[in-house]
Image (cartoon, rainbow, N blue to C red; front, side, top):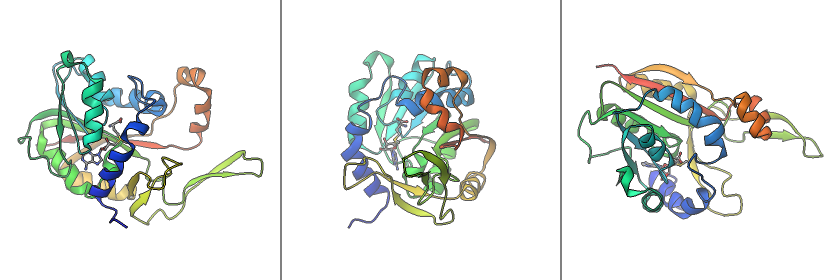
Length: 254
Ligand SMILES: C[S@@+](CC[C@H](N)C(=O)[O-])C[C@H]1O[C@@H](n2cnc3c(N)ncnc32)[C@H](O)[C@@H]1O
């Protein structure tokens, strides 16, 4: 069996890129539309004229959204299959350049290249998160922000999930083995033997990595469905019981 590291995580992203993004719209998947996009948008503020990096851009929906909001966007991803989808799905007049690279070391970009970096559901997918966070700081101008979302480390733990009754009704969310940091298989795709990987770390480890890299932690957001989204997608009522995602808003001090 291959070692579960960044390279193996990317091998699996290459395998599942098409399938994972098959139902994406220009808002991404349903969780992005309902939970992540509104919260990220609020964190990002006004984008007009800002130079932004979409770090771990996947098939590029967020890059395209940010350009349409006025930003100058470059995307980077370590999966060639994802980049192929991004290039296919992005009209050339949007002017987005997509690069191949590992967030743990992005040699193609000079110091202080970006006003803002956003990384949507990526940092939990790579092994050396401390190095990746430090690399994001290097790429930011002083005062620039690095905003990243991850699976909520307090609720998405090894062995976490719904506890159901005999009829399959969801009773409550179970959390276990919180302090067991390391690589795990996700339950996606459920019908494939080799699933996507992710790396669990505690909330404290993430905060330590942010402050240790010299970034100021400005906010932590646990996205909740709005009343409008609940009306449109009633299934999201169950997301009022447990927070699946966590967004960090950080800023480079000097
Ligand atoms: C859950 S997907 C998110 C993609 C996109 N941000 C979105 O929200 O649709 C995770 C992405 O991170 C990329 N990724 C994982 N590890 C990476 C690394 N070390 N460097 C760059 N990209 C990475 C994967 O290839 C994949 O495209």
